[in-house]
Amino acid sequence: MTDINVLISQAREAAGRYPRASEEQALTYSCEHLVDDVLGIRIMSQKEIQPWLEDICHTEDLDVPVIEFGRKRPTSMGVSYLDEHALCLFGREIRQSTVLHELAHLSVRADGHGVLFRDELVRLTRAHLSVEYASLLHTLFVGCQLDVAPWGASARRY
Image (cartoon, rainbow, N blue to C red):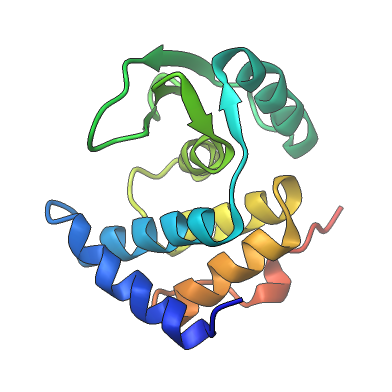
């Protein structure tokens, strides 16, 4: 695996790909995408997403959101609608990490990409993707000086 300092530098550089985003949002996106690229992430079909998401929501004691699908967009892979408790995923092939990203927004009821969102994203990825994925994501968040709870806080407590 590549040295973590190299990955942190790559995440910081990649944040420039999101010129319309705040610095915090751009760094959050770049860390997520880098982890997907470094570790690989499962791509799911639209048919696979509903049962997978329902299982996660039941495990996490979350209301299952309404899921919509739209055509692939060049600048967005998904969006959450807090008031409707719904998410829309774009394209025919959807990354598991994108589903968990949008679910994290719904879980903490936050549009933004602040510390509550990042904590929930790390917790969900640890529980439903892999410890390796969540650990690298957490390490990149810390290395990019994004606020996030200590690693131990992401462990399941029930």
